[in-house]
Image (cartoon, rainbow, N blue to C red; front, side):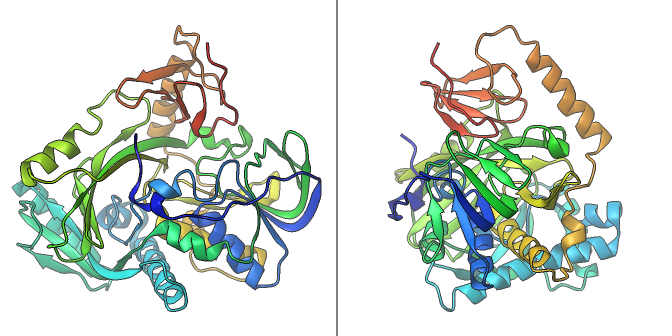
Length: 435
């Protein structure tokens, strides 16, 4: 059975909503982003209520690797070429600012935050040449970056770039701190939002502002997020090894092995791919561990899932024109810790009527690229026509059985169910009845 390294943390249990209520701000989703937003607005004097359909931190947050870095899969050279220097610089500084916010929090809250170096590595001579271009791109943004040819980690490389003063943490320990003082309702599933009212099956919550921080937005059509989001999964395995220097790294390609350290543990991940596709699962990760660490046992293993935007940049801000007081934080692209903090800054500043210098970068009104839209809609049409009785509760696409994980998965938008029909990941809202 999969279990993440963070799940040994015991979080408090909160009640289920049992009556109609009213509040100034409603936050839907009690992961890191939702709780950071709720915590700041509460401290600013707002009346805030948080609702979570399962347990606090019990979905995507407990499966994150909790790396906090500006070295992501997205490449700054590509941002410069597509959008210009100002855009790329602003995006970089948004990430750096998010890291500093966590560092500031760690001065008063204990959540195992560490300031460490982050790396992006190359494995071949061709990747080395491409990575050197990325190194030059970051230098052109006037940010300190190092080039290294060798490192102390047990991975053969042809070169790497290093950013110092990045971060990593224990996400559930942070949640332990954030929930204190917040009004939270667990096992409270919002099914609809209409006219400043959020509806559960039995009760309503009236709110001046509503924030949807649920991974993939559960609102089906408004904002057309189903046309500009997919979901990817990533496989993670953990061994004990405290001989390596603290830090984290990703490869040049999104499918490469990534890693981070945590206390006496070494956390590996990789084989990222779209939910519902047939791939090798844990095999690349376990093969690497077996080759490099033949005498080590896997202590923990799990599969994470996250929303992927059409351009690799998160959607943070007002949900859509027809719901001006509803906000969204999604499309974190498997880099949820930095984006959660950025979301808390942008959304809170908007509600508090303050300017935010990064808001324009993450504007949800961006349209998906034509190639992404055509590919995504083509897959959706094919999956809607798939001859199967097992269908996703989101928009009706066919479900694919994952033999390795014993789950049913939707290739269209990434909903995931266990064999009994219990929903594991949204955007679907309800469990499925077993056939």
